[in-house]
Image (cartoon, rainbow, N blue to C red; front, side, top):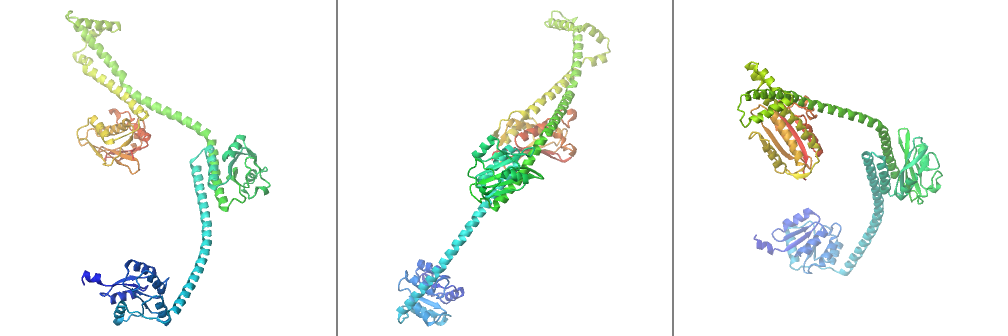
Length: 632
């Protein structure tokens, strides 16, 4: 069959909720009709409106709407010439008459007679119409049936609406209860957070009363704490202007007196007045004239009552069981916080004295270590200076002895004479020293007067001075005021490595492509990498394969960059891996080093909000990791 033949076939819409029935009709009419299908009345009506079929087959017994109802609806917009044929298993005579009265063209029964089915449909397409005797009677019966159905439906809908209205009220009440409980839970969470994060009662208690009033919608809340003698309960926090006024007056209530707070504290039990006018033990506060109901909850820890919380409302019977449970839980948590604050205050004196003692001890220890270190570095200086002085005197003595026979007209003779006279003025007798030297054997004389010895002593002095002076940058560097800015780490470290003049190819630099700029002081960050690279290179002294790898990438922690300086040296033994961070500790022995480099690195990293750590195994090199903040 060609596409043109398909286009010329008539369209037939079949509406039936039975899938097997639709499948049978589709197979029987294949090649003769374009069969459109719908499994429910509304879909059938919509499909008929969209496609305008040439014929409609319609089951009578459909869900939610009868086939008769559907036929009447289809007649309202399909051409009068479009045949609508009933195809149903209901073959009662009255059903046929009612279907024809509703506008059906014909009436066919199920099961389908395959041999004659197509011919019957062709007849209806050709204009065949089944006739009905006395259609007015059947139409009236159908109308009455429709009215009755509508009446039942209206009744059902009315009952449903009434039920829905009841359910809606029940649901709304439940929603209101759940919302209330949610607010209570949120308030409890805020209170718990405040209790765990705020240690000072002067900050915690006002926040507590504000949270209670604003979260629960109460009129007033206040917190009382008892004095040391347990005689008076003093207001320590109160909500709003009334609370401020009472705090300014030093408001207090007697424990066990004629007030709910006093009674609550005395008996260590909650007091609830649903109507304060009927409560005998109630203090009529002039600052709170609108109070109609009040609740007092004790703050107790162990066997001791620390105070109480008052909560007041402008409504009678304002407190639900949820309110009471939640507020008592808050009061219990607050009591723990108050007890902790009291304990902390009690320990402050002892702690401050202990801290002062420990501080002095730490200062003395650090000062002693620093003095000992500087003393060690400075120890060679006096001896070297003394030897240089002796060597210089010997040289001057030799010089004078030789100039005694020199040309007095030489341009430098006068300068030499001035030097000799200056030495005599300082009590240095060059002539006597020259005679002493002349008496020495030549071999001993060569040892006494040696430029190599002078230069060696001067080198010792210079090295000691440089080492001592290098403390300045290690100590001042981390303490220097930071100038925080965003800068690219790769070019900064690359320049630093080039300035260190290490052998070509000794350092490999690797940078992640998505590496963001670092936020910090570039000079201090330079000091970190300078110290780490310098330490790594010195640790590999004498190795022909010495190599350093420097890399950086984004850290797993958002907003941070992680860098690594790794070497293939001997590694750091486990027993030294903690000691290397201590000031003045060094593994370099007599090879120099202040012992401040790594401690300075740690201080700088911490001041930038990052950290530094070591990973090393003996014989497998050392890797120092540094995290620094970066632009997100």
